[in-house]
Amino acid sequence: MVSFSKICVAALSAGGALAAPAPHGPLVKFGELTKMPSKWVATGHAASEATIKAQIGIKQSNIKGLQEKLADIADPNSPNYGKWLSKEEVEKYTAPAEADVAAVKSWLASAGITDVAMPTNDWLEFSVPVSKMESLLGSKYEWFVNVETGQKVPRTKEFSVPQNLHSLIDVVTPTTALYHNIQPHAAVEPAAAAAGLVSPASIRSSYNVDYKGTGNTLMATTGFLGIGASHSDFASFANQLQPGMKDFEDISVNGGSNSGDGSQIEGNLDTQYGGAMAYPNPSQYLAVSPEGGDVSSFDDAVLALGTYLNSASNPPSSVSTSYGGEEQVFPGTYLDRICNEFMKAGSRGISVFFSSGDGGVGGNGESSCSSGYYATWPASCPYVTTVGGTEFDSSNREVVADFAKYNSAVTSPGGGYSKHFSAPSYNKAATGAYASGLTAAQRQKINVNGRGYPDIALVSTKYQVVVNGGVDQILGTSASSPAIAGLVALLNDYRKTQGKPALGFINPLLYSGKVDAALRDVTIGANKGCDSPGLPAKKGWDAASGLGSFDFGKLRSLV
Image (cartoon, rainbow, N blue to C red):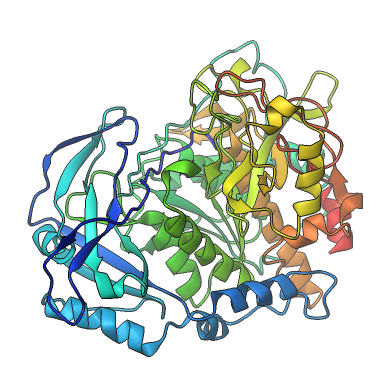
C-alpha cells in the first residue's frame, strides 16, 4: 500500500468483576488495552454526549461448516466450483442461537437500550452516547490522539460484559481499536523515477491484457477514516490516460461519505487505477465510517466494510482495500471474527483484495526485528487475497520492488508469515516448502506453520496519479492492489459472457496448479525491512512476491 495505516488493538484478558443486574451476572473484564499503541496518547475523558455506533458480534452457530463449504465451492477441482452462496444461504451458517441473541438483547434492554438493529443476523448494532456506553461496559472512554496525524477519537482502555454472556459474544466494538490516516508516498528521488512511468496502457501492455470487456461487472475500492477521492481529478485522469472511463459512484458504508478531497492521494490512486483496469466496467468508492477525528460518531471501519459486503444486495465482484495494522496488537478473537467476515464475502463470490504493506518484514515500519518479523493484518487473513509489489529493472525483468530508492520513508512490499493464522490447506505446501529452504536464523523470525503472504503481485512503482489537477508519481502496494482488483473484475466480465460465475475467493485457484501457465515467477529481490535484509524472492511461491505476477491473456484462457 502507499502507506500502511496502523489499526491498533490490544490483547484481551480476563479479570476483576463489577456489579451488574441478574440474570446476566456481574460485569467481568472482557477487553483491555494492555499496551498503548505507538504514536497514540490519551488526553482526557471523552465528551459524554458524543455518539457511539456500537456493534456486538454474537457467536455464530456453524462458522466451521461455512468454512468447509467455501473450501469446496472455491476448489477448482470440485464439481461445486463457483457455486457461490446467496446472502440467505450464508446466513443459515452464521445465524447465532435465538436464545443467545435474546440474552444479549435482554442485557441491552436492562440498560435502557432497546433500539437495536441487526445489519446481518450475527451482529447487533445500536447508537448511544458515550455516557451510556460507559455505564453498559463499566468503562471510561477517553480521547486518544495520534501524535503524527492529529487524529482524535474516543476509545476505552478496558471494558467489561456480564459474566454469563462471555461465552455468547465474540467482539464488542468500538472499544480498544485505534486507527490513523495513512500517509501516501510519492517518488521523491527524480533520478530513480525518471523513466518507465506506469499508466493503464503500460499495465495492459506489460501483463498482456487482451480483453476489452463489456461493462457487465462491478468493482470497488474503499476509503477509510475520511480519505477522499476527487471526481474532478478522476475526470482529468480519464481524459489523459483512460478516455471514455465513466465516473466512479460514491457509496456510503455505515454512514461514511466521500469528501471529494483527493489531496491525501490514496483515494485518487485507488479510484483511478481500480476503475481504469476494470474499464469499461463501472466502479464504486466505498466511503467507510468512521471518518478520522469525527466526534459525533465512531465505530470499527474494518467491521463496517465486512458487514456491508455481507449485507449488500448488489455487492461488487471485486474490492480492494489498502489499510491494515500489525497483527500482534490485535486480540485473537478480533482477528478471527473479522477475518471470517471476509470469508463470508468470499462465499458470496466476492474477491477481497488487501495490499501487503510497504515496510517489508518490518510491519508498519518497525526499526528492529530482533524479536521476529512483523506480520500485517488483514493481509495475513487466509480469506483475503493479499497483493505484493514489483517493478521492472533496467533489463525489463520483473523484480521485487525496492521502494526505498524512491522514498526513504518506506522500504519494500510487505510479506511474511502470520503468527496467529495457521497455513490454509490451499497454500500450506507452497509456504511450507519455502520456509524449509530458509536459513535457521530466518526461520526463527517467522512462524513456519503460519499463513504465508502475499498471494500475488503486480507492478507497484511510478504510478501516474492525478492529484489536485497535477500528475504525481506514486508507489506502494496501495497501487498494485486496486490494479489487480480491477483486472479481476475484467476477468469476471469475460466469465459472465461465457455463462460462468465470478471468480470469487480466488486463492485456491491460484495455488491449484491449474493456472500455473499464466503465472510469472519473480525470483529477484527481497522484502527488506526494519534491520533485516528480509525474505528473498525464489522460484515458486515466496514471501517477497507471492506466486509472482501473471499474464492476463493466459489467465483468461484458463479460467
